[in-house]
Image (tube, rainbow, N blue to C red; front, side):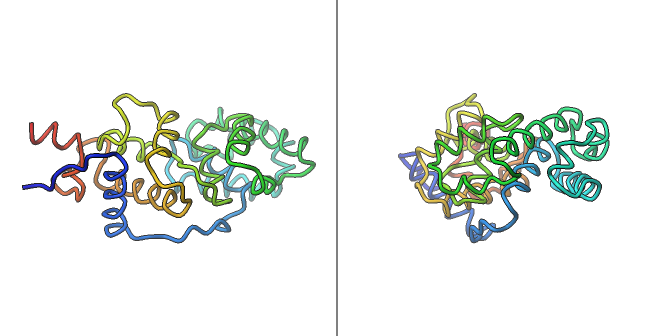
Amino acid sequence: MFPEIKSTLQEKAMDMYEIFLKMYGERSLKPTRRDAMTELIMTILSHRTTAANEKLAFTRMWDYYGSWEAIRDGDTAKLTELIAPSNYPEVKAPYIKATLAKIIEERGEANIDFLENLPVDEGLRWLRSLTGVGIKTASLVLLFNFSKAIMPVDTHVHRVSLRTGLIPPRTSADKAHMLLLKILPNEPHILFNFHVTCLRHGQRICTWNAPKCNQCPINHLCDYYHQVYKS
């Protein structure tokens, strides 16, 4: 017999969190992992791309240009060629150039460390004003680099949250960012580890195709499991 499903979303989320920590481990939130400009541009490159290809695209771009200003001023076709390991390079190259141009024009340099001193809402609004920067990219930069209390939702976090019932069916990824914040503690360390462990779970167990539900340690908490296997 499976344990009784928790009565509130907050309880369910924290039960999932504790189980994920035991399964995937807890990580320290270290905002100095890489500088915020690099995080921003690499996250743009990461859209619909593997981590390995994201890193390769960035390395090729940086090795060729060597500075943010050179990337801003470089030929769009050449930049597109360099970041080709990342999917949709023809879209991302103009985004990157436009984003760098706006940051350098507005801030006087390619540096966004001022976001550390802004409230979350202001930082989110400023980042989303940049070309090609949506709520996921903005949230990742604010949490990973500045330890802001915000919840990034990538495709894996979105899938796990939908299947478990933390968010209603057909909720968009954009809306999920705010809904998950309402049920998770307003604590950057917890939000960071929920994001990371949920992502790992989506990659390894709760996959898009053929999820391994019978191996899942949170299937007793999962709406999808109960609908598919227990109905």
